[in-house]
Image 1: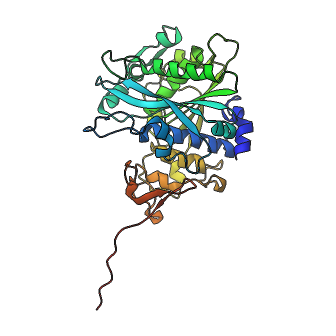
Image 2: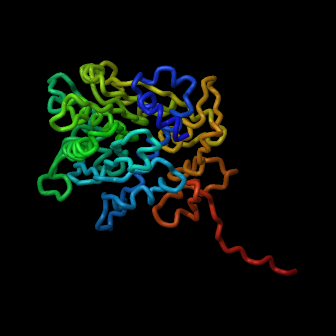
Image 3: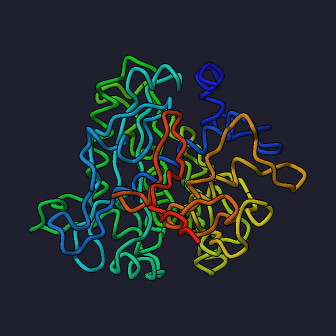
Length: 383
């Protein structure tokens, strides 16, 4: 597994726009996409939702513990370290943690074949973010792309570029935070083989699309003072809404160092919005999956569920059937992290990810999660 991904990383990152890899879906590409979707999921897993907490709307995990506490260390060969958190301003004038910038360790570099700079964005959580999602009127993205006619979703743009002057966390925008963090890493590792990968789910996928285009359009993938060297930028947005207009798409199409693969579940409504044909359009290549074909899932599981997307990547087949690839050893227990979507026969508690005791779900050394039932059972009374 490690050697094939290490030697194929450029192909898997879309150097040829995934030609010949999507149908049938290449086994290494399945591994690769699931890896990046797990990193997108970690951005949301770490969010502190407790309003009474002094850390509300910030990361629950410190950088040095981040991936271990997100369950992405045990049994996982793709090792990264978080170098920066991303904070953004939302509609409610609330500063919130929105994701992170990370880079592969030396061990992770050996497995992935290069030094990967990773930017991960989470999806919608707070009330203010839902309000931003609803702002479907468009605004100019000239600040990003130098074109008055490149129009994008105003809510997404506001989160990406907004500031709160008296805030401890967003005196500068999320955009500027990422620019600074990515540029520092590009400069630090410029003498190595480097990639920049951007990922996110839902709202995070829209922000990942904006961010990846921004990086490539404005040369953040080039070392300071050495514009002759350029590193590839790849985006894996999952369940992304549409972000911009046809001029925005035209700018994307002209960015030769940028490659984007959108993952779309057939029944997920979010990639179909905003419903404004001719005003909004998608960019990049599309990989379609259909989790309704899975024999493991309940019919009422949300088609937008991130872990269901990962499950779909593991099992989608060219003939339209669904069969989990045995070599992937996909852990179906994660489907119930935030849902009750896995069939009851598998005996996995619903909604078990709560950053505390995980409803007796325990991570094994191979990275899989198992239900360890420690419940007291009374002795059978004697007759």
